[in-house]
Length: 393
Ligand SMILES: *Cc1c(COP(=O)(O)O)cnc(C)c1O
Image 1 (spheres, rainbow, N blue to C red):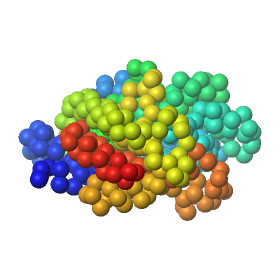
Image 2 (image 1 turned 180 degrees about the vertical axis):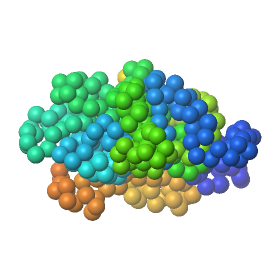
Image 3 (image 1 turned 135 degrees about the horizontal axis):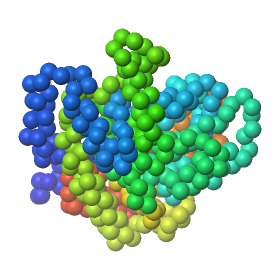
């Protein structure tokens, strides 16, 4: 029996990535140890410069996490009490919690059923309906879910028509682009996460804000270090959210490899598409899933987007049973996200109810992320698809 196919196939095996960059990473860590410049050492500024270059912005500000990057970007732009920010209910919790942390009010709009990204049409209808004088809509926060940019042409138009800020939640999309412009450079500011499972990952928590505004850059730098521009003189109440020097050193190494890793992710996704297409398991685009359907829906890529496949997400009938079936065969899978944000207990006070965002709710019931990472092997992908075929047979 082939040993390799009998091993579990996990969602993400970072040890394969590390095996390829071990010497470089250990050397970078050793350099930090040798210098003992542990807080905002030279590696932080070097990584920030390289990241800004990669994103096509003039500035990048390292911070402690993607969640903090969202908060920093919005707080630096002056979003606070009395303001509202429109975002997606089909995202990680931080997309909404960061708005609340600014003291602002999240307004949710449903998603596009093909890409799962915030729907510009749904956002526009909020902008046309709402004229509560008690809150002022200040910003749109699209999320580039699974590594594919939201429709940034449409959001840029809404931004200009309604005089809003446009802030990207690019936590899953380092290296993605929209009509050739990189994620991070598509709005006033963007937030990235380097949580270990992200497509560009640290070896712990880390995050980044990108912007081409010198004012936002200066304000983010102040806010990440206690509102201190001059040591022990505080202009405002900020936070302690610096990017750790050790993480910056690791990220500097990994950023050099990222273009290749993103290409490999796209190749893995293309091979999944090809094997699934040949399997007879694939429903026609946008075909709805009935309970008795045996067909799955593959990820849709907008022709204007360069997708980096942070996740490869299918829609599957009897999704939870399929997930169990895969688990029994040692195949990992994950649900991003099983409960839309408007139905989360912590956000009950926002006053939304089940049924408010039917496209998000349907997606939450049907999506399944399959193993994907640059080093995933074709034989492992075959095994994953075979197991799915066996479930529906
Ligand atoms: C991961 C993630 C975040 C938060 O990033 P952390 O680094 O975990 O704080 C925010 N938004 C989205 C869409 C994410 O996927």
